[in-house]
Length: 85
Image (cartoon, rainbow, N blue to C red; front, side, top):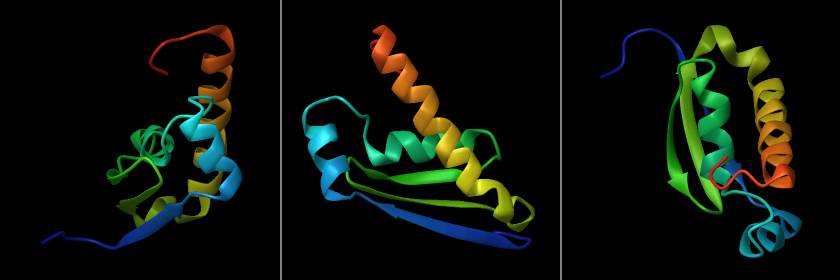
């Protein structure tokens, strides 16, 4: 059992994201959420098209920014040819 106050975020794909993931132009949703959660000490579970993350409540207001940052970082990595962003 976790001690403290935590928040859970769930992310599901959109049709556009589904298409980009299947074309290998965007990493999986769990990959995006994991990258964001790393920065705030969160724990992520999921698969290509849906994922969840649990993290300390103190980071609640910043998680959207972290997810957006992760998408931008991964997008840049894909554009410059990094094999595993």
